[in-house]
Length: 176
Image (cartoon, rainbow, N blue to C red; front, side, top):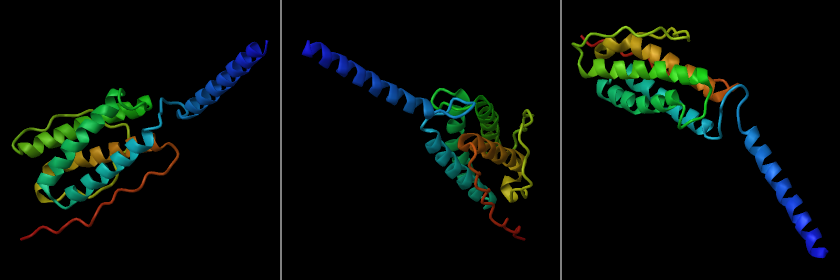
């Protein structure tokens, strides 16, 4: 008899523990989306990459801009695929559009004689940023659109938290 009572108490305790654990997992998701606990880490990574790309692009450094685009593109692909990160559908779509701009910018920087492809318009407004300097002028509109899209992705990842502004440094004056 005492064994049956002990088993019943153990079963109730295990059920309560499972219910509490399940409730904790349920509250980890975001409202209206498929968010997960690694969304904040992804947002921090994307913010760091966006800011790094902004700084090197506006410094006019072609090699570092291409390197940063090459690092950013797979992350945007992961966001667009929605397999590695559980995020909202709108953010996934924006990730796909942003990846297209990243790949196209990298392609044009690799071969400046290449002709730019027409890409679909972004569903986010492009911020009024100055054009990129000198050797990056060929991809100026693409990179500005990419930065706008990545900022939109950050807004989706961060939810209600304000997205830090773009760290646009003063554009260097052209050398004579």
